[in-house]
Image (cartoon, rainbow, N blue to C red; front, side, top):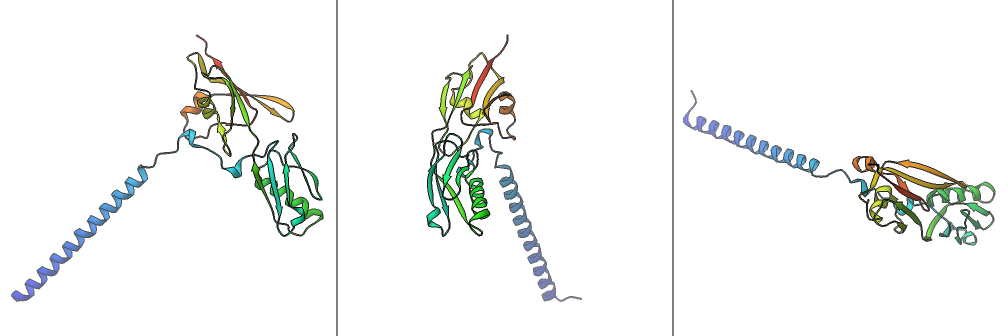
Length: 220
């Protein structure tokens, strides 16, 4: 037989365990609710949010570059990219960098110096000044014309449509053609801007400098 004092102590310990269990469940409930709220409150990025950084931007004609070879002051150069995408560098002469990112251009220059002149050269390439880069939008848009790329940013097809004031009431967004000069030949690309606008999980088609975009007219 338990004495009154023993029974009272047991009751107190039981109540304490129940209280601690209740507090633990309450904390777990709050943590789960907080996690669920965090996971559901961040929407997927909109299609227009896709932008490239300065490092991903491509080098083009009339861009000003600074080429630095670590501990080789005589090889440092500030050069302008010519119409063929080439620059003239010490010892190397003409080097093709047009169409490359700065990281890709640095790799090209590094490999050329390492082939005949230096052991394991460390090369960096930076764009100090970008040439004005433009594209053209024609056809069924509110403000057809020539548009400039924002500095160190890319423009996708949907953003190009917005810059041109959007579609007219006669436009057929599913019938967009894009003309692009590649290796001296004009390539025509058929695009469906309407489908791109609906698919927010896929990055839209990227516009390049000198592209000519034409929005077709819908048939009644």
